[in-house]
Amino acid sequence: MAAGVTLNDVAKAAGVSIASASRAINGLDNVTEEIRDRVLAAAGRLKYVPHGAARALAMSRTNTIGVILPDIYGEFFSEIIRGIDVGARARGLHILVSGSHGDLNEAVTAVRSMAGRVDGLLVMAPYANAGDLAGKLPVNLPLVMMGGSAGQADLPSLIIDNYGGALDAVRHLREQGCRRIAHISGPENNLEAQDRLRGYLDGLKENGGTQEPIVLSGDFTDNAGYAAVRGLLRGTMPDGLFAANDMMALGASLGLREAGLSVPEDVAVVGFDDIPVTRYASPPISTLRAGVFDIGQRSLELLSVLIERGDAEGGPPPASQTVRPELVVRASSRRLSPSNA
Image (cartoon, rainbow, N blue to C red; front, side, top):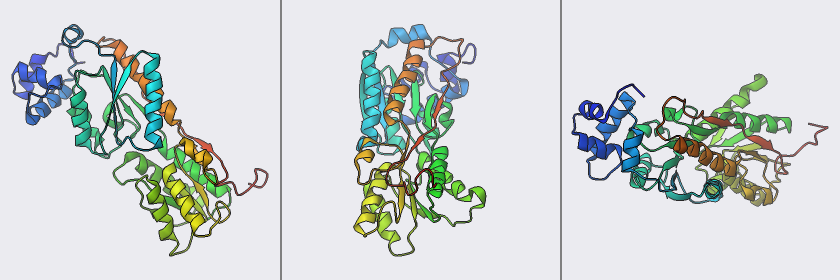
């Protein structure tokens, strides 16, 4: 924090009254969006942090954690929430969950609605414009980002090495004898999907590789994986397929089997995330294990450090953490025995 920066300094920089600055910083509703944005932008520039004693008088502990996710449907988000919940219960905390539906403005609205009701926030916002998020949030709430891209918004984060995991997927498929590898990508504006696509593209180039990329658009749903495979049937089929998440890998595997193709003999399939259902599919899906449950739990632990520290100065913020996914080889991609690989 810049020495001596006060709420009065923030108010002057934003050109508003101290009362308006206080309402904006505390996330209250009785202030216009235009004023709120000016105040939060000024607070960010000045690196203003509310005084601990004043905050303690204004806001008592709620023992509740706010969780903002892009969606709350599906096994991936269920595992994230379960990890957070287990970590929270161990500390006597409750969680309040909201979905942003992949929209930055909805995420900001959801976060502001939680101001005064939660002690801290866990936010998953892997959008291309999520760097704008920090400047639109109440500055007195501890916040940890889950996922996204390294250094996103310069906030404490727990990040998956999506690029490295994608490289491992392509390397594995090559080791299994695949020479024409396709990729089903995630949404274009999703930072994690972008990193997985980069890993796929760079994996094709390794060791002098000359294969032209085969990139099929997806949206992280099983329907997208299924549709991508149906589209491939109209051309030359690849012999390896890396899907940007497990749900698309499951949909793709079903589409291949319905077309009379064998997985992995005709097309080897690899997903990403290791959601529980992958091990029970037919055949079980190879994947990159990111530890989805652990990400939720570890993010909660990281946030707890921030909350317990409060506004005390003198120490650096908790370091962001990066998780390198582990390749889990199952029947969907195992074409060669280890001795023949």
